[in-house]
Length: 266
Length: 270
Image 1: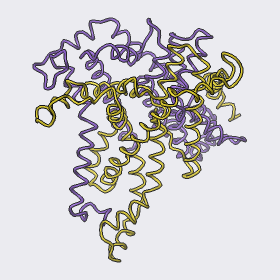
Image 2 (image 1 turned 45 degrees about the vertical axis):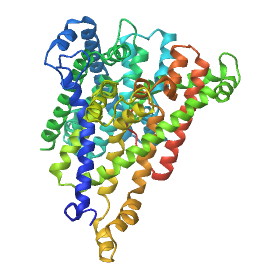
Image 3 (image 1 turned 135 degrees about the horizontal axis):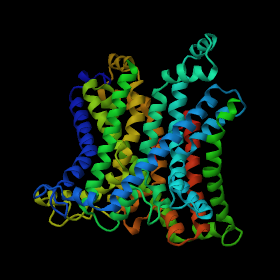
Image 4 (image 1 turned 180 degrees about the vertical axis):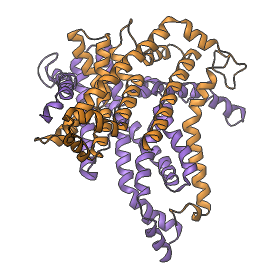
């Protein structure tokens, strides 16, 4: 009875109400920010007294915002490529390999996901201070890669485990070299794995705040760091505009995932 | 041969994860002088103890609130017609993937003295003075609950979906009322998911940095911010390392508990 939606009686409406309210609670602040980014009031009054694009104009006119967005994109792109490559190679090793401590190694690869990011941030910051990597693209890429790689390994090992290896063996029997069989047979069939790995890695780096706050320098910062620094001074609607741009990128990537997932399934 | 394939990832992890963290922890017992002085200072001061306490209080509060809201939502999601539930799922995912700072910024704007919430309440005549909703425990709790809700709804949804409806049918046939079925069958069957989800939210909240430092006041600092402050403003690596170790030990212990109880530790989130 409790697991049949239509037989819940009055409880059905209570559940619908709380689900509706929770959904509103989750989505409204995001819509609110997007709306305010077009509002003409500097004091973020809602509903806005009028509509304007001036906050976007200010965003695009300020080289520091643009530079931060460019840096974010650049770093996320490098992280994505490295994360998928290293993750893919490691996943083959983990899924296909037979060696002692394999399960332990696999768990180890996922630990950056459970460790509080602030601990990693502080530890890397100390290390980078010694080797001079703070405030460099390399430093950012390394830091973001450490937290992106677990997502990558998780996605690709999952896909690889669902793949029937005998198909790859069949290709080898038909004359393909083992590497050729992997590239031309295995990889296309597990492509949803590296694909989600790429999306997760990109978004992880693109959205990363805590590590970035520690890795940034006055001359090199990502968009979240720029937002963070601006937020500490005031709540200017330019942040709403920047945030809306971040949301648009996120939604675009989510739609891409949904579309490709559909395409990959068929 | 196959082991060699894991070497690039392993090298990255050892050099840029394990060694830096170990070195930070080592500094907590070596700087400024060898010994446990930093830990004594950390545990002997009421200021720091207050921060520990506050971290636990906020995390516990957030856990209870997310559980109370998350259970009915997960339940509804598990049994709703799929057209409805897919809308709710999209909202959950969108909210999860929206930048943390964007979501926190939204609450800073919404909760401020002249924000929409205060204005609406005053407009309705419910209050005459703006409520202090931000830079205090209320602000942190709202902001953190907002961030953590998806992390409890998703695992609970998984657990409730797996419950066999026949068990509840049997209960109905045996004369159980709806309330009895809820408290004696559904909730106990979903309990493992609730405990595991709650543990996860609690652990994640303990280490949160961005949301508490923007929505909380100076009076209710949390542990992550203390660590950042030791390192960034005070340049006290010994104390920073010691505070990091405390956070690390609590986190890993709770994950070990989860692993022990449920076999798997769910690893998500930041």
